[in-house]
Length: 198
Image (cartoon, rainbow, N blue to C red; front, top):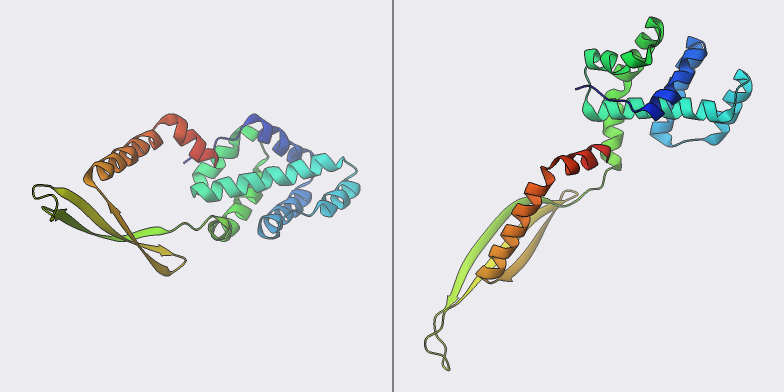
């Protein structure tokens, strides 16, 4: 799967063409370190002083590399697709090989960090249900009152959780229709674009 780099990130990454490969190697090290531990603005300032350029240029270059490595790791981009994704940036062959090497060495580690940072929501495990029908009572001899009892088992951070819910069939049908509409909505192009950006 190819990664499509927008114009803003292309501009940020184009700064890497103006610096030596050793400097780009250091930027790659810094970007991987920032992905692990978070950004450190002092490093931008010291790198900018050594290179004799503006701090913003260094910051945008490192953040552009962080974006490139994170997005490629998220999508599990193959070696060929990685090369094709950065081809529009027209980097030198040596620079392209360096970026590919850093990506391949750190993609598994970056994916693990991203999965640790993501929100942990309860996961569905099992559902038990029972249908109860009251046919008559002392005051009403001819009534039918159905109730559906649901026992929902979820797993949250390795812990099992059980929730007991009770509803009538009309509300259950409405709930089912609402969930089906939500599933259909998430398949639309608009929702896919939002999910891709998230």
